[in-house]
Length: 101
Image (cartoon, rainbow, N blue to C red; front, side, top):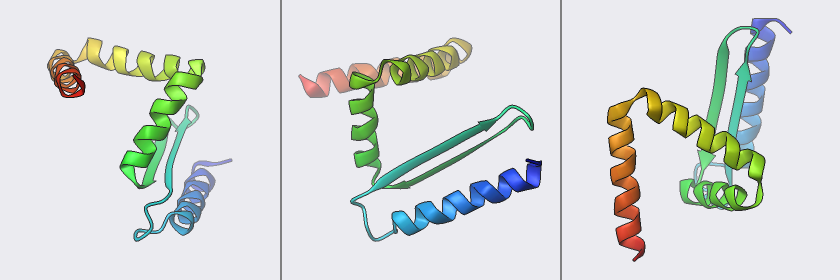
């Protein structure tokens, strides 16, 4: 596929997502992420209830070791390169732990 065909496909998928998860219906959630090494681009689309999507990702982290490895590697490498973001992340983890207890 050429670059425009890939863009058009992404737009078609996003249109389908919008049909599946309408703005007034938050019983569904979709996360679409596509990386393209050929054209050095990525596409992401998030739609629906963020809490539902978050809960689904958390469930998958417990049950899907490959996703867990991907998420941890992505966050870890990002934080290693961004010390300020690392401090914010650690403060957030500390706050969540206090809230849970």
